[in-house]
Length: 194
Image 1: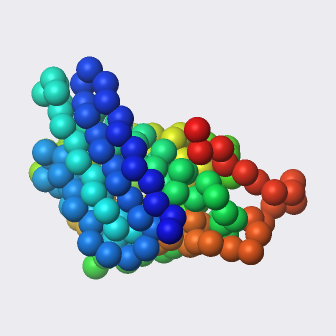
Image 2 (image 1 turned 60 degrees about the vertical axis):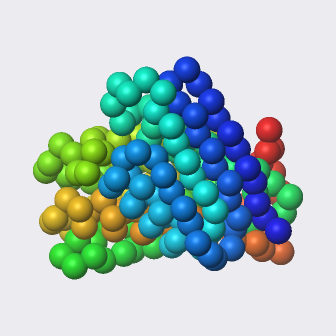
């Protein structure tokens, strides 16, 4: 079974990610309502189950919780896939009513998060929308993947954020899927789980 448990603790947060890369129930509790919804959506569309729990020790704002959750999730995903070959690439285009979002992933060991989402509000449900891009960048850093998330057609900000996490989930599902070999002209691509 491809699974991992990561506990990340700093002076600011305590994050637990316990994940299995197969469909099932996901339970997310971060103290940020809309962020819980987005991370649960991501896991569901990724075809993963498990628990994500975050405790904000200092109560500054949502930034540290979002960042540390993404870092712990990326590490857990990297550990879960470390024992076998993956498809490496994944992409999805997801509509949500009037909105259309593209996500593309390359799990290659070359981290980079690139996000172009034209939010017109500052926050939804306790989540500063600037932290959507920061979540993607932090996840890409920890997973050691290149991740692009781009708005193709904009509209309602809730729909835009949710479509972005759905598209990213589908792209990760494809990229992290087991394969006979990891596609690369460089030879075998190995991602160290440490």
